[in-house]
Image 1: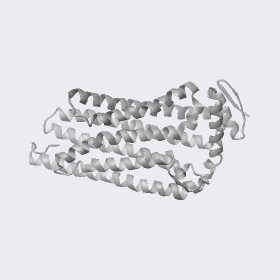
Image 2: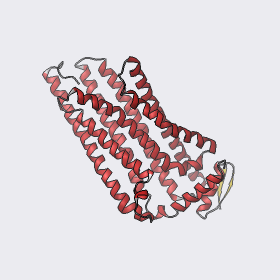
Image 3: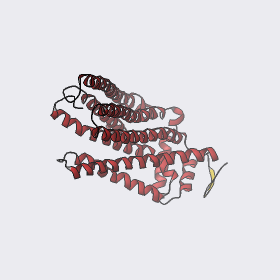
Image 4: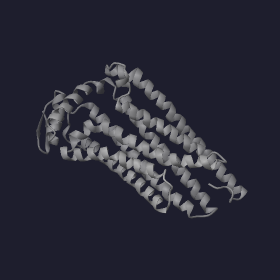
Length: 331
């Protein structure tokens, strides 16, 4: 915010608020950096030995591990740049660079979160939707990099009125994609929970761990998008107003930005905690065999019905069920 047009009292209030926001974003950045190191330590010293895997580059740098480490790293850099934006007397060149990060950071974080969730949750999702529906969402995930790269690319162009509008539209498209996938995952996870409550399914225990933590993560993702939209609306109010009213909108916008970043930061934290829970012996038993057998079944039977897929999953656990379309009955 330009302080030159403010009175001394107004300027002091804005600077005090900026100092508070700087501290909040710095704390988030430091926590994300610490958790990045903690995640790598956990993978090397706990997860790989617990799963009985050899310690090599393929197990340490698996797609899931790389995505989660990248998510923490991106958030650490992004919130660090957010903190830097509150430094007094920031040069115009630095402000210009930071403005690019403010667009790139959240979008990149949402993309990494979407890909991680897709890889982590596929084993559950495949059991709950038809083969055709699964293929449609799979195509959407494969096309998503182009959607996420669109606003990142546009911001490096010399922005005019129509490019500004295109940037806003592309960011809105990214938000719609993220919310759609969050709601899709939530639907699948809730469907598994409801069917288990009604029919006492004997599917692998780790499915329910993924489902329950997935619901929390999907809620955090949707909340992040909602707070982001609210902050953008407040920012438009700020740009259309003058002091002292604009000061209130500025502080409100910055407060919402901190809440948004905290919500965004909560996503990898929950995913990290889920990762720790999934190496419990009670959940680890049969995880690899269940996944491999289910993957083999799905590759050999791509058009299998939802009921047939669930029957295969349950038979893996040695607890067969009598299944008919629309009905699940435990022996």
